[in-house]
Length: 590
Image (cartoon, rainbow, N blue to C red):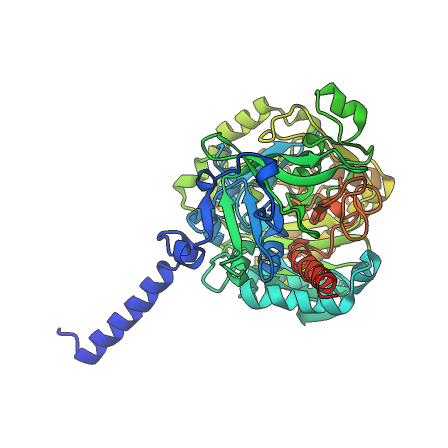
Protein backbone atom coordinates (compact mmCIF):
# COMPACT_ATOMS: atom_id res chain seq x y z
CA UNK A 1 0.00 0.00 0.00
CA UNK A 2 1.51 3.32 -1.06
CA UNK A 3 1.93 6.13 1.42
CA UNK A 4 0.17 9.35 0.39
CA UNK A 5 2.19 12.51 -0.21
CA UNK A 6 0.61 14.23 2.84
CA UNK A 7 1.35 11.27 5.09
CA UNK A 8 4.92 11.09 3.80
CA UNK A 9 5.41 14.81 4.42
CA UNK A 10 3.99 14.45 7.91
CA UNK A 11 6.31 11.50 8.57
CA UNK A 12 9.36 13.43 7.37
CA UNK A 13 8.37 16.41 9.52
CA UNK A 14 7.92 14.30 12.64
CA UNK A 15 11.12 12.35 11.99
CA UNK A 16 13.06 15.60 11.49
CA UNK A 17 11.62 17.01 14.70
CA UNK A 18 12.63 13.91 16.65
CA UNK A 19 16.08 13.96 15.06
CA UNK A 20 16.53 17.62 15.94
CA UNK A 21 15.66 16.80 19.53
CA UNK A 22 18.14 13.94 19.61
CA UNK A 23 20.93 16.02 18.13
CA UNK A 24 20.62 18.96 20.51
CA UNK A 25 24.01 20.09 21.88
CA UNK A 26 22.75 19.32 25.38
CA UNK A 27 23.08 15.65 24.50
CA UNK A 28 26.74 16.03 23.71
CA UNK A 29 26.86 14.19 20.36
CA UNK A 30 28.02 17.25 18.45
CA UNK A 31 30.26 20.15 19.33
CA UNK A 32 27.73 22.94 18.75
CA UNK A 33 28.63 24.20 22.20
CA UNK A 34 31.96 25.40 20.80
CA UNK A 35 30.08 27.87 18.64
CA UNK A 36 27.88 29.18 21.44
CA UNK A 37 30.68 29.13 24.02
CA UNK A 38 33.66 30.12 21.92
CA UNK A 39 35.40 31.48 25.01
CA UNK A 40 35.76 27.98 26.55
CA UNK A 41 39.25 26.61 25.85
CA UNK A 42 41.53 23.89 27.08
CA UNK A 43 43.90 25.02 29.82
CA UNK A 44 47.00 24.24 27.71
CA UNK A 45 46.05 27.09 25.36
CA UNK A 46 46.77 29.63 28.11
CA UNK A 47 49.92 31.74 27.85
CA UNK A 48 51.39 32.66 31.23
CA UNK A 49 53.18 36.00 31.70
CA UNK A 50 56.90 35.66 32.33
CA UNK A 51 56.51 36.96 35.92
CA UNK A 52 54.10 38.68 38.25
CA UNK A 53 56.03 41.93 37.80
CA UNK A 54 54.90 41.99 34.18
CA UNK A 55 51.22 41.80 34.99
CA UNK A 56 50.83 45.61 35.06
CA UNK A 57 47.44 46.63 33.79
CA UNK A 58 47.12 43.51 31.61
CA UNK A 59 45.96 41.11 34.30
CA UNK A 60 42.39 40.04 34.71
CA UNK A 61 39.96 42.09 36.76
CA UNK A 62 38.70 38.85 38.32
CA UNK A 63 39.96 35.30 38.44
CA UNK A 64 37.18 32.93 39.49
CA UNK A 65 38.51 29.56 40.64
CA UNK A 66 35.90 26.84 40.18
CA UNK A 67 33.40 26.75 37.32
CA UNK A 68 30.63 25.21 39.37
CA UNK A 69 27.19 26.03 40.69
CA UNK A 70 28.21 29.45 42.03
CA UNK A 71 31.23 30.12 39.80
CA UNK A 72 29.43 30.06 36.44
CA UNK A 73 26.72 32.64 37.25
CA UNK A 74 29.28 34.76 39.13
CA UNK A 75 31.75 34.83 36.23
CA UNK A 76 29.00 35.47 33.68
CA UNK A 77 27.74 38.44 35.68
CA UNK A 78 31.16 40.00 36.34
CA UNK A 79 32.04 39.73 32.64
CA UNK A 80 29.33 42.26 31.80
CA UNK A 81 31.71 45.05 32.85
CA UNK A 82 35.12 43.53 33.55
CA UNK A 83 37.63 40.98 32.23
CA UNK A 84 37.20 37.58 33.86
CA UNK A 85 39.17 34.33 33.86
CA UNK A 86 37.22 31.27 35.00
CA UNK A 87 39.26 28.17 35.90
CA UNK A 88 37.52 24.77 35.93
CA UNK A 89 39.40 21.58 36.83
CA UNK A 90 37.04 19.32 34.85
CA UNK A 91 35.73 19.21 31.31
CA UNK A 92 32.48 20.40 29.76
CA UNK A 93 29.13 18.73 30.51
CA UNK A 94 27.87 19.11 26.95
CA UNK A 95 29.86 16.18 25.52
CA UNK A 96 29.04 13.64 28.23
CA UNK A 97 25.84 11.68 27.66
CA UNK A 98 25.82 10.42 31.23
CA UNK A 99 25.61 14.04 32.38
CA UNK A 100 23.08 15.14 29.76
CA UNK A 101 20.43 12.43 30.17
CA UNK A 102 18.24 11.92 33.23
CA UNK A 103 18.16 8.21 32.38
CA UNK A 104 21.95 8.03 32.82
CA UNK A 105 22.00 9.87 36.16
CA UNK A 106 23.42 6.93 38.11
CA UNK A 107 26.15 6.17 35.61
CA UNK A 108 27.86 9.49 36.23
CA UNK A 109 28.17 8.64 39.90
CA UNK A 110 29.41 5.16 38.99
CA UNK A 111 32.31 6.48 36.92
CA UNK A 112 35.29 6.46 39.30
CA UNK A 113 37.94 7.16 36.65
CA UNK A 114 40.31 10.12 36.90
CA UNK A 115 38.39 11.90 34.15
CA UNK A 116 34.94 11.33 35.63
CA UNK A 117 32.71 14.40 36.17
CA UNK A 118 32.08 12.92 39.62
CA UNK A 119 35.04 12.49 41.99
CA UNK A 120 34.05 10.06 44.70
CA UNK A 121 35.42 10.19 48.22
CA UNK A 122 34.81 8.34 51.46
CA UNK A 123 34.35 10.36 54.63
CA UNK A 124 35.98 9.11 57.81
CA UNK A 125 32.46 8.16 58.90
CA UNK A 126 32.53 5.38 56.30
CA UNK A 127 29.93 7.01 54.07
CA UNK A 128 30.57 7.20 50.35
CA UNK A 129 30.17 10.61 48.79
CA UNK A 130 30.87 12.56 45.60
CA UNK A 131 32.12 15.98 44.53
CA UNK A 132 31.77 17.49 41.08
CA UNK A 133 34.66 17.71 38.62
CA UNK A 134 33.01 19.31 35.60
CA UNK A 135 31.92 22.72 34.33
CA UNK A 136 28.58 23.40 35.99
CA UNK A 137 29.67 21.70 39.21
CA UNK A 138 27.01 19.92 41.22
CA UNK A 139 24.29 20.93 38.74
CA UNK A 140 25.94 18.53 36.27
CA UNK A 141 25.72 15.44 38.48
CA UNK A 142 22.81 15.99 40.89
CA UNK A 143 19.18 14.84 40.85
CA UNK A 144 18.03 18.16 39.39
CA UNK A 145 15.50 19.35 42.01
CA UNK A 146 15.17 23.13 42.15
CA UNK A 147 13.64 24.93 45.12
CA UNK A 148 14.43 28.26 46.77
CA UNK A 149 15.54 28.94 50.33
CA UNK A 150 13.03 30.12 52.90
CA UNK A 151 12.45 33.79 53.67
CA UNK A 152 13.83 33.05 57.13
CA UNK A 153 17.07 31.79 55.61
CA UNK A 154 17.48 34.88 53.38
CA UNK A 155 16.95 37.18 56.34
CA UNK A 156 19.31 35.15 58.52
CA UNK A 157 22.04 35.42 55.88
CA UNK A 158 21.68 39.20 55.82
CA UNK A 159 21.03 39.24 52.08
CA UNK A 160 19.14 42.03 50.30
CA UNK A 161 15.70 40.46 49.72
CA UNK A 162 15.03 42.63 46.65
CA UNK A 163 18.24 41.58 44.93
CA UNK A 164 17.66 37.96 45.95
CA UNK A 165 14.22 38.07 44.34
CA UNK A 166 15.79 39.44 41.16
CA UNK A 167 18.61 36.88 41.12
CA UNK A 168 16.52 33.71 41.44
CA UNK A 169 14.43 34.48 38.30
CA UNK A 170 17.63 35.25 36.36
CA UNK A 171 18.60 31.61 36.88
CA UNK A 172 15.10 30.18 36.45
CA UNK A 173 14.41 31.81 33.09
CA UNK A 174 17.49 30.16 31.62
CA UNK A 175 17.63 26.59 32.91
CA UNK A 176 14.69 25.65 35.20
CA UNK A 177 11.55 23.73 34.19
CA UNK A 178 8.33 22.41 35.66
CA UNK A 179 8.58 18.61 36.06
CA UNK A 180 6.32 16.16 34.26
CA UNK A 181 5.17 14.93 37.69
CA UNK A 182 5.42 11.19 37.21
CA UNK A 183 2.81 8.81 38.77
CA UNK A 184 5.17 7.63 41.52
CA UNK A 185 5.87 11.22 42.49
CA UNK A 186 2.14 11.95 42.59
CA UNK A 187 1.55 8.92 44.82
CA UNK A 188 4.22 10.15 47.25
CA UNK A 189 2.82 13.70 47.07
CA UNK A 190 -0.74 12.56 47.86
CA UNK A 191 0.51 10.11 50.50
CA UNK A 192 2.38 12.89 52.28
CA UNK A 193 -0.79 14.97 52.42
CA UNK A 194 -2.69 11.95 53.75
CA UNK A 195 0.06 11.49 56.36
CA UNK A 196 -0.47 15.05 57.61
CA UNK A 197 2.31 16.93 55.80
CA UNK A 198 0.00 19.72 54.74
CA UNK A 199 -1.15 22.00 53.17
CA UNK A 200 -0.85 21.21 49.48
CA UNK A 201 1.21 24.07 48.06
CA UNK A 202 1.00 22.90 44.44
CA UNK A 203 3.84 23.75 42.06
CA UNK A 204 6.11 26.39 43.49
CA UNK A 205 9.78 27.28 43.85
CA UNK A 206 9.11 28.73 47.31
CA UNK A 207 10.03 27.02 50.57
CA UNK A 208 6.72 26.48 52.38
CA UNK A 209 5.67 24.07 55.10
CA UNK A 210 3.55 21.30 53.64
CA UNK A 211 3.82 19.30 50.44
CA UNK A 212 4.73 20.78 47.09
CA UNK A 213 6.04 20.10 43.60
CA UNK A 214 9.28 21.93 42.88
CA UNK A 215 11.23 22.83 39.75
CA UNK A 216 13.83 20.77 37.92
CA UNK A 217 16.81 21.45 35.67
CA UNK A 218 15.71 18.53 33.46
CA UNK A 219 13.46 19.53 30.57
CA UNK A 220 10.48 17.52 29.31
CA UNK A 221 12.78 15.42 27.14
CA UNK A 222 14.90 14.40 30.12
CA UNK A 223 17.82 16.65 29.16
CA UNK A 224 19.82 18.31 31.91
CA UNK A 225 20.47 22.06 31.89
CA UNK A 226 23.38 23.01 34.11
CA UNK A 227 24.92 26.15 35.56
CA UNK A 228 27.38 25.99 32.66
CA UNK A 229 24.57 27.20 30.39
CA UNK A 230 24.38 30.39 32.46
CA UNK A 231 27.68 31.31 30.80
CA UNK A 232 25.56 32.12 27.75
CA UNK A 233 24.77 35.38 29.59
CA UNK A 234 28.46 36.34 29.60
CA UNK A 235 30.00 39.13 27.56
CA UNK A 236 32.11 36.87 25.28
CA UNK A 237 34.66 39.64 24.75
CA UNK A 238 35.34 39.85 28.49
CA UNK A 239 35.61 36.23 29.58
CA UNK A 240 38.02 33.32 29.20
CA UNK A 241 36.95 29.92 30.52
CA UNK A 242 39.70 27.32 30.86
CA UNK A 243 38.70 23.67 31.29
CA UNK A 244 40.99 21.01 32.79
CA UNK A 245 42.68 23.87 34.67
CA UNK A 246 43.54 22.39 38.06
CA UNK A 247 44.19 25.15 40.60
CA UNK A 248 47.17 24.36 42.83
CA UNK A 249 47.34 27.43 45.04
CA UNK A 250 46.71 31.15 45.26
CA UNK A 251 49.68 33.48 44.77
CA UNK A 252 50.19 36.21 47.39
CA UNK A 253 52.24 39.39 47.57
CA UNK A 254 53.64 39.37 51.12
CA UNK A 255 55.31 42.81 51.05
CA UNK A 256 52.46 44.84 52.56
CA UNK A 257 50.88 44.93 56.01
CA UNK A 258 48.51 42.19 54.92
CA UNK A 259 49.08 39.49 52.31
CA UNK A 260 47.47 40.39 49.00
CA UNK A 261 46.17 37.83 46.50
CA UNK A 262 47.68 38.51 43.06
CA UNK A 263 47.05 35.36 41.07
CA UNK A 264 46.57 31.60 40.82
CA UNK A 265 48.85 28.69 39.97
CA UNK A 266 47.18 25.94 37.94
CA UNK A 267 48.18 22.88 35.96
CA UNK A 268 46.75 22.16 32.52
CA UNK A 269 45.55 18.81 31.15
CA UNK A 270 49.16 17.84 30.38
CA UNK A 271 50.41 18.64 33.87
CA UNK A 272 52.16 21.82 32.71
CA UNK A 273 52.22 24.60 35.32
CA UNK A 274 50.75 28.03 34.56
CA UNK A 275 50.33 31.28 36.49
CA UNK A 276 47.47 33.72 35.94
CA UNK A 277 47.39 37.17 37.55
CA UNK A 278 44.84 39.80 38.41
CA UNK A 279 45.30 43.44 37.49
CA UNK A 280 46.80 45.91 39.95
CA UNK A 281 43.75 48.09 39.47
CA UNK A 282 41.75 48.72 42.62
CA UNK A 283 38.93 46.22 42.96
CA UNK A 284 40.54 43.32 41.11
CA UNK A 285 40.20 40.05 43.03
CA UNK A 286 40.68 36.30 43.12
CA UNK A 287 37.35 34.64 43.96
CA UNK A 288 37.27 31.02 45.10
CA UNK A 289 34.13 29.07 44.18
CA UNK A 290 35.35 25.47 44.48
CA UNK A 291 32.55 24.21 46.73
CA UNK A 292 32.44 22.99 50.31
CA UNK A 293 35.30 20.53 49.79
CA UNK A 294 37.42 22.39 47.26
CA UNK A 295 37.36 25.91 48.73
CA UNK A 296 38.72 25.13 52.22
CA UNK A 297 41.15 22.71 50.58
CA UNK A 298 42.50 25.44 48.27
CA UNK A 299 42.82 27.94 51.13
CA UNK A 300 44.82 25.41 53.13
CA UNK A 301 47.05 24.57 50.16
CA UNK A 302 47.63 28.32 49.72
CA UNK A 303 48.75 28.82 53.32
CA UNK A 304 45.53 30.06 54.94
CA UNK A 305 44.50 27.86 57.85
CA UNK A 306 45.66 26.45 61.21
CA UNK A 307 49.38 27.16 61.44
CA UNK A 308 50.33 23.85 63.06
CA UNK A 309 48.49 21.82 60.41
CA UNK A 310 50.10 23.78 57.58
CA UNK A 311 53.60 23.47 58.98
CA UNK A 312 53.25 19.68 59.26
CA UNK A 313 52.96 19.61 55.47
CA UNK A 314 55.68 22.23 54.94
CA UNK A 315 53.17 24.75 53.59
CA UNK A 316 54.30 28.36 54.03
CA UNK A 317 51.85 30.12 56.33
CA UNK A 318 50.22 33.16 54.72
CA UNK A 319 47.60 33.68 57.42
CA UNK A 320 47.00 31.64 60.56
CA UNK A 321 43.27 30.92 60.85
CA UNK A 322 42.20 28.01 63.02
CA UNK A 323 38.67 27.94 61.53
CA UNK A 324 39.48 26.94 57.93
CA UNK A 325 38.01 23.51 57.29
CA UNK A 326 36.21 23.39 60.63
CA UNK A 327 32.51 22.90 61.47
CA UNK A 328 31.77 20.95 58.29
CA UNK A 329 28.24 19.56 58.07
CA UNK A 330 26.41 17.12 55.84
CA UNK A 331 22.67 16.52 55.80
CA UNK A 332 22.33 12.82 56.67
CA UNK A 333 19.76 10.89 54.69
CA UNK A 334 18.11 7.52 55.14
CA UNK A 335 16.32 5.75 52.30
CA UNK A 336 13.35 3.41 52.39
CA UNK A 337 12.93 1.02 49.47
CA UNK A 338 9.42 0.21 48.23
CA UNK A 339 9.13 -2.67 45.71
CA UNK A 340 6.33 -2.49 43.13
CA UNK A 341 4.28 -5.20 41.47
CA UNK A 342 4.72 -3.54 38.08
CA UNK A 343 7.39 -1.51 36.27
CA UNK A 344 7.41 2.20 37.03
CA UNK A 345 8.80 5.06 34.99
CA UNK A 346 12.09 6.47 36.18
CA UNK A 347 11.87 9.74 38.08
CA UNK A 348 14.20 11.78 40.21
CA UNK A 349 13.08 14.22 42.87
CA UNK A 350 9.97 16.22 41.87
CA UNK A 351 7.96 16.56 45.07
CA UNK A 352 8.91 17.24 48.68
CA UNK A 353 7.28 17.21 52.08
CA UNK A 354 8.58 20.10 54.19
CA UNK A 355 7.73 19.03 57.71
CA UNK A 356 7.89 20.80 61.06
CA UNK A 357 9.72 17.78 62.50
CA UNK A 358 13.15 18.78 61.19
CA UNK A 359 13.09 16.53 58.11
CA UNK A 360 12.34 16.72 54.40
CA UNK A 361 10.72 13.77 52.61
CA UNK A 362 11.51 13.23 48.91
CA UNK A 363 11.39 10.31 46.46
CA UNK A 364 12.89 8.74 43.34
CA UNK A 365 11.86 5.74 41.27
CA UNK A 366 12.61 3.36 38.45
CA UNK A 367 15.73 2.47 36.62
CA UNK A 368 16.95 3.94 33.38
CA UNK A 369 19.17 1.16 32.05
CA UNK A 370 18.74 -2.22 30.36
CA UNK A 371 18.39 -5.61 32.04
CA UNK A 372 21.94 -6.49 31.08
CA UNK A 373 23.41 -3.49 32.86
CA UNK A 374 21.92 -4.54 36.21
CA UNK A 375 25.01 -6.69 36.76
CA UNK A 376 27.30 -3.73 36.12
CA UNK A 377 28.79 -1.54 38.81
CA UNK A 378 26.72 1.65 39.05
CA UNK A 379 28.57 3.38 41.84
CA UNK A 380 28.42 3.46 45.59
CA UNK A 381 26.16 6.51 45.41
CA UNK A 382 23.65 4.72 43.20
CA UNK A 383 20.16 5.34 44.57
CA UNK A 384 18.64 2.04 43.44
CA UNK A 385 20.82 -0.16 45.61
CA UNK A 386 20.62 1.84 48.81
CA UNK A 387 24.31 2.81 48.73
CA UNK A 388 25.45 -0.16 50.85
CA UNK A 389 22.96 1.02 53.43
CA UNK A 390 22.42 -2.41 54.96
CA UNK A 391 26.07 -2.43 56.05
CA UNK A 392 26.92 -0.24 59.08
CA UNK A 393 29.18 2.68 58.07
CA UNK A 394 32.29 1.46 59.87
CA UNK A 395 32.03 -1.88 58.03
CA UNK A 396 31.84 -0.35 54.56
CA UNK A 397 35.33 -1.47 53.57
CA UNK A 398 36.67 -1.87 50.06
CA UNK A 399 36.36 -5.63 50.54
CA UNK A 400 32.67 -5.17 51.36
CA UNK A 401 32.24 -3.11 48.21
CA UNK A 402 33.82 -5.77 46.04
CA UNK A 403 31.62 -8.43 47.63
CA UNK A 404 28.58 -6.26 47.01
CA UNK A 405 29.52 -5.83 43.36
CA UNK A 406 29.90 -9.60 42.92
CA UNK A 407 26.53 -10.29 44.53
CA UNK A 408 24.64 -7.55 42.74
CA UNK A 409 23.86 -9.88 39.84
CA UNK A 410 21.67 -11.87 42.24
CA UNK A 411 19.33 -8.95 42.85
CA UNK A 412 16.11 -9.69 40.96
CA UNK A 413 15.39 -7.34 38.08
CA UNK A 414 11.98 -6.62 39.62
CA UNK A 415 13.74 -4.91 42.52
CA UNK A 416 14.65 -2.11 40.15
CA UNK A 417 10.95 -1.53 39.46
CA UNK A 418 10.68 -0.05 42.91
CA UNK A 419 11.04 3.38 44.37
CA UNK A 420 12.89 5.06 47.19
CA UNK A 421 11.51 7.39 49.82
CA UNK A 422 14.21 9.70 51.13
CA UNK A 423 14.24 11.23 54.58
CA UNK A 424 16.78 14.04 54.98
CA UNK A 425 17.70 15.93 58.16
CA UNK A 426 16.97 19.61 57.50
CA UNK A 427 19.30 21.29 59.99
CA UNK A 428 21.98 18.90 61.26
CA UNK A 429 23.68 19.98 64.46
CA UNK A 430 26.47 17.40 64.19
CA UNK A 431 29.74 18.99 63.06
CA UNK A 432 32.95 17.66 61.55
CA UNK A 433 36.08 18.94 59.84
CA UNK A 434 38.25 18.87 56.74
CA UNK A 435 42.04 18.41 56.81
CA UNK A 436 44.73 18.02 54.19
CA UNK A 437 46.39 14.62 53.88
CA UNK A 438 49.01 15.88 51.42
CA UNK A 439 49.77 18.85 49.18
CA UNK A 440 48.35 17.31 46.00
CA UNK A 441 45.41 19.46 44.95
CA UNK A 442 43.97 16.61 42.87
CA UNK A 443 43.60 14.31 45.88
CA UNK A 444 40.66 14.36 48.25
CA UNK A 445 41.29 15.85 51.67
CA UNK A 446 40.32 13.99 54.84
CA UNK A 447 36.67 14.77 55.67
CA UNK A 448 34.66 13.85 58.77
CA UNK A 449 31.00 14.78 59.25
CA UNK A 450 30.27 12.96 62.55
CA UNK A 451 26.77 11.96 61.45
CA UNK A 452 24.25 11.70 64.33
CA UNK A 453 26.80 12.68 66.96
CA UNK A 454 24.24 15.23 68.18
CA UNK A 455 21.12 13.80 69.82
CA UNK A 456 18.81 16.23 68.00
CA UNK A 457 19.81 14.76 64.65
CA UNK A 458 18.87 11.26 65.81
CA UNK A 459 15.54 12.57 67.06
CA UNK A 460 14.82 14.19 63.70
CA UNK A 461 15.73 10.98 61.85
CA UNK A 462 13.34 8.93 63.99
CA UNK A 463 10.59 11.47 63.26
CA UNK A 464 11.29 11.12 59.55
CA UNK A 465 11.07 7.31 59.52
CA UNK A 466 7.74 7.47 61.38
CA UNK A 467 6.37 9.91 58.79
CA UNK A 468 7.48 7.53 56.05
CA UNK A 469 5.63 4.69 57.77
CA UNK A 470 2.42 6.74 57.71
CA UNK A 471 3.09 7.58 54.06
CA UNK A 472 3.37 3.94 52.92
CA UNK A 473 0.15 3.07 54.80
CA UNK A 474 -1.79 5.93 53.20
CA UNK A 475 -4.65 5.25 50.77
CA UNK A 476 -3.09 7.09 47.77
CA UNK A 477 0.12 5.14 48.25
CA UNK A 478 -1.67 1.79 48.57
CA UNK A 479 -3.68 2.53 45.44
CA UNK A 480 -0.49 3.17 43.47
CA UNK A 481 1.47 0.16 44.72
CA UNK A 482 -1.62 -2.09 44.38
CA UNK A 483 -0.85 -3.50 47.80
CA UNK A 484 -3.32 -4.05 50.61
CA UNK A 485 -2.57 -3.20 54.22
CA UNK A 486 -1.60 -6.79 54.97
CA UNK A 487 0.99 -6.69 52.20
CA UNK A 488 2.35 -3.41 53.53
CA UNK A 489 2.60 -4.94 57.00
CA UNK A 490 4.56 -7.80 55.49
CA UNK A 491 6.79 -5.28 53.74
CA UNK A 492 7.52 -3.55 57.01
CA UNK A 493 8.66 -6.84 58.51
CA UNK A 494 10.69 -8.10 55.56
CA UNK A 495 14.41 -8.72 55.69
CA UNK A 496 16.44 -8.96 52.50
CA UNK A 497 19.96 -9.97 51.62
CA UNK A 498 20.18 -7.53 48.74
CA UNK A 499 21.55 -4.07 49.49
CA UNK A 500 18.18 -2.40 49.35
CA UNK A 501 16.86 -0.85 52.47
CA UNK A 502 13.36 -1.50 53.87
CA UNK A 503 11.54 0.08 56.80
CA UNK A 504 12.73 -1.44 60.11
CA UNK A 505 10.40 -3.83 61.89
CA UNK A 506 9.86 -2.05 65.19
CA UNK A 507 8.97 1.51 64.26
CA UNK A 508 7.53 2.09 67.73
CA UNK A 509 10.91 1.29 69.28
CA UNK A 510 12.90 4.53 69.46
CA UNK A 511 16.20 2.79 70.25
CA UNK A 512 15.71 0.44 67.31
CA UNK A 513 15.03 3.38 64.99
CA UNK A 514 18.04 5.29 66.27
CA UNK A 515 20.25 2.31 65.45
CA UNK A 516 18.58 2.06 62.05
CA UNK A 517 19.42 5.73 61.43
CA UNK A 518 23.07 5.21 62.36
CA UNK A 519 23.49 2.01 60.37
CA UNK A 520 21.80 3.16 57.17
CA UNK A 521 23.02 6.75 56.95
CA UNK A 522 23.94 7.91 53.46
CA UNK A 523 24.37 11.32 51.88
CA UNK A 524 22.41 13.44 49.45
CA UNK A 525 25.56 15.51 48.70
CA UNK A 526 24.42 18.65 50.52
CA UNK A 527 27.55 19.07 52.63
CA UNK A 528 28.53 22.61 53.54
CA UNK A 529 30.76 24.72 55.77
CA UNK A 530 34.52 24.98 56.22
CA UNK A 531 34.76 28.70 55.34
CA UNK A 532 32.09 30.13 57.63
CA UNK A 533 31.02 33.76 57.68
CA UNK A 534 32.49 35.45 60.74
CA UNK A 535 35.30 32.86 61.02
CA UNK A 536 36.97 32.65 57.62
CA UNK A 537 35.14 35.29 55.54
CA UNK A 538 33.28 38.47 56.47
CA UNK A 539 29.69 39.29 55.46
CA UNK A 540 30.94 40.36 52.01
CA UNK A 541 32.62 36.95 51.65
CA UNK A 542 36.08 38.52 51.73
CA UNK A 543 38.68 36.25 53.32
CA UNK A 544 39.70 37.79 56.62
CA UNK A 545 43.38 38.55 57.19
CA UNK A 546 44.25 39.04 53.51
CA UNK A 547 43.37 41.43 50.70
CA UNK A 548 41.71 40.80 47.32
CA UNK A 549 40.42 37.31 48.04
CA UNK A 550 36.86 36.06 48.45
CA UNK A 551 35.07 32.74 48.85
CA UNK A 552 31.56 32.58 47.40
CA UNK A 553 29.89 29.17 47.61
CA UNK A 554 28.34 26.62 49.99
CA UNK A 555 31.48 26.41 52.11
CA UNK A 556 30.32 29.67 53.74
CA UNK A 557 26.94 28.21 54.82
CA UNK A 558 26.20 27.00 58.33
CA UNK A 559 22.88 25.57 57.08
CA UNK A 560 22.00 24.06 53.73
CA UNK A 561 19.44 26.39 52.08
CA UNK A 562 15.98 24.99 51.33
CA UNK A 563 15.33 21.32 50.75
CA UNK A 564 17.99 21.21 48.01
CA UNK A 565 20.69 23.90 47.80
CA UNK A 566 21.48 24.28 44.10
CA UNK A 567 18.91 27.03 43.49
CA UNK A 568 20.33 29.22 46.22
CA UNK A 569 23.97 28.55 45.33
CA UNK A 570 23.32 29.62 41.71
CA UNK A 571 21.34 32.61 42.97
CA UNK A 572 24.24 33.47 45.28
CA UNK A 573 26.65 33.56 42.33
CA UNK A 574 24.40 35.95 40.44
CA UNK A 575 23.59 37.98 43.58
CA UNK A 576 27.23 38.52 44.57
CA UNK A 577 28.20 39.26 40.98
CA UNK A 578 25.64 42.07 40.79
CA UNK A 579 26.60 43.33 44.25
CA UNK A 580 30.32 43.43 43.43
CA UNK A 581 29.63 45.21 40.12
CA UNK A 582 27.42 47.84 41.74
CA UNK A 583 29.92 48.57 44.50
CA UNK A 584 32.93 48.76 42.18
CA UNK A 585 31.19 50.88 39.55
CA UNK A 586 29.97 53.26 42.28
CA UNK A 587 33.57 53.73 43.49
CA UNK A 588 34.92 54.26 39.99
CA UNK A 589 32.20 56.78 39.08
CA UNK A 590 32.82 59.02 42.08
